[in-house]
Image 1 (cartoon, rainbow, N blue to C red):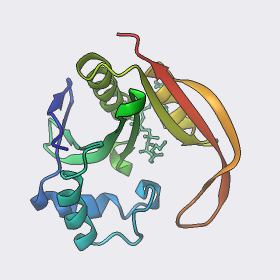
Image 2: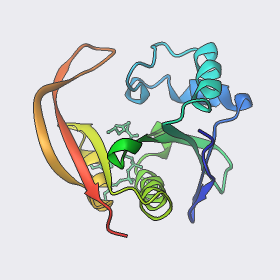
Image 3: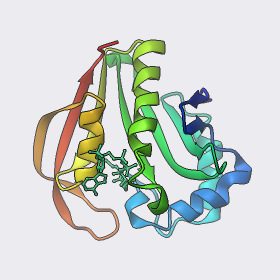
Image 4: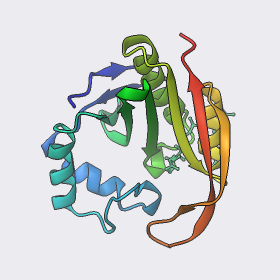
Length: 174
Ligand SMILES: CC(C)(COP(=O)(O)OP(=O)(O)OC[C@H]1O[C@@H](n2cnc3c(N)ncnc32)[C@H](O)[C@@H]1OP(=O)(O)O)[C@@H](O)C(=O)NCCC(=O)NCCS
């Protein structure tokens, strides 16, 4: 789907452009930013394919996170829409240098507002590993609560390490 431009004080969220594929590859050198079925190592051709493909998917808003002062891409985030259930799921990842500045919370808030105010979905979901304390904090600040903990529910796609997985939910409060 073509994503809307979402803007906060410090960040601009918008569609990835093909010319930005190199920036995507740079971020994806960090194994912490390999999600789902992303290949690793993540190559330029993977990023180029994905940037084109994601625009054709009718259930995903995918964003590059731009830092407004430097105009650099500092991370990515996305919303998966489960239209039949009237729900969405958010996920996010920041490059190493952009962490600890409140950016995940700021980008998360833009997505939450978009989903609840504009799309008017009734619920948002998120998933984390049991030890991702940074992400736990972000989600709590965004109004999410843990609804389920699954023993050994997460397998790291790179290391094969098994961990508990936590499922989070926020109801539309706007
Ligand atoms: C997890 C992640 C998204 C946090 O992003 P961030 O921009 O650093 O988060 P914020 O700066 O908005 O931090 C929010 C709070 O979490 C805290 N926090 C951030 N990282 C933390 C960590 N590793 N351990 C404990 N607390 C942490 C911050 O101090 C802040 O707390 P405060 O509000 O009391 O000051 C980022 O580290 C990241 O991208 N990690 C790799 C990918 C990932 O794990 N994505 C989430 C998958 S569920």
